[in-house]
Image 1: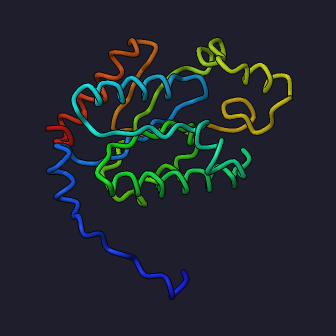
Image 2: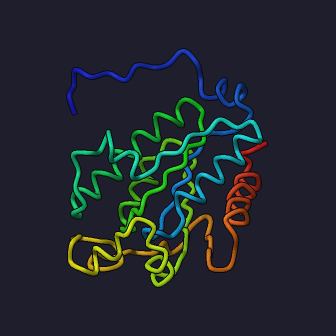
Length: 197
């Protein structure tokens, strides 16, 4: 690290931000296969939080790759860097007192563990557990079809592994619930953990 760089401390404290916003900051880390419903559920949670008067923001995988991470590919090294950058951005948002949703495949358990370790606020791993067959049937972006045809390399679930969370904080079995029920389960967890008042 450059020794000429010094952390500048803010004049507004974390406790003051919590008091102002009425809830604690946290990172909601949605993980699951492409087409599992991560973004859809994350958006539904974001809407519920907004309706409760919470201050939140959603970092979506595709959206971030349009800008901040547009220089990264989908090989393993790029995926690791993608997760690292997202965690650092989420930390900036939680430092401002927000509840931050991050909807990324994040296929490797070690990378999610690193994200948890780097997180400067409560880290909530939300496993959007949808069978591969269901994701492939949905295929909202046509990516599975392209991967099966050999047009996309390193596609998670096809020729690149997905390591399911062994102990997620919230386990959403989407084959057994609606989007609304999944979103409520996440919000209920935040309530139970004292993140929401």
